[in-house]
Length: 262
Image 1 (cartoon, helix red, strand yellow):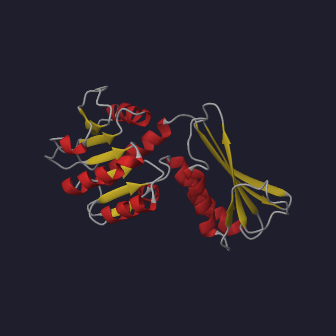
Image 2 (cartoon, one colour; image 1 turned 180 degrees about the vertical axis):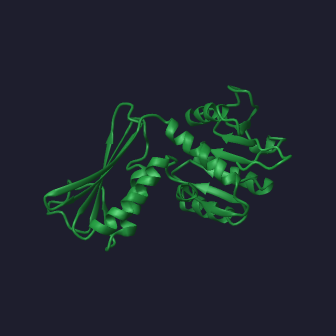
């Protein structure tokens, strides 16, 4: 956060979902930084696990903050956005699985305040998306594209939101509008040219692995990202919060904006 002479430059952060796994990691990362401090947490479980108060409802928080990081549940999105609009507080939305109605609400809120939203908070994944666009623009006409994603056995959604983000990045740069194919066992035919195969693996404690394969005649290019801990997503969220706090006007931002700022 840029320093201004005579002004408190400590970024005041609130965490929605503070007592969840990701919320606890964000708390640890923020505590190690000299430019930010967590001043409040919002969680249905109001047990105090760190040196800041925890509220079940953001509207109960009597203080203020510079930005909120949301790693809670999609069911809480509407109420949190209401609080952010009332208090003019920027928000980093890290939860996934929103309905179309909720996505529309996020876009409407971004017309009033700065809102950051990304399906994956890893800087590496988002940089990978930029690389994939270049690969697709060069190779797309002659190479088949397949995506493989692996996650732990407790993950609810399949394919992952990140796999779909990667597919969208590729599709954006292809010279054709690709069909996303998730299951081939009922299709007894040769692979059509204009599709992106998306495959899901679930097992053990895999944090997250994503591979995008461009397969051409006698050569294969594979671009892969491994997340070895959830800390990479928390670190990305904290960096996004610092970025969002510098924005002076409303808008819907994502990790591409953070990469561009770097």
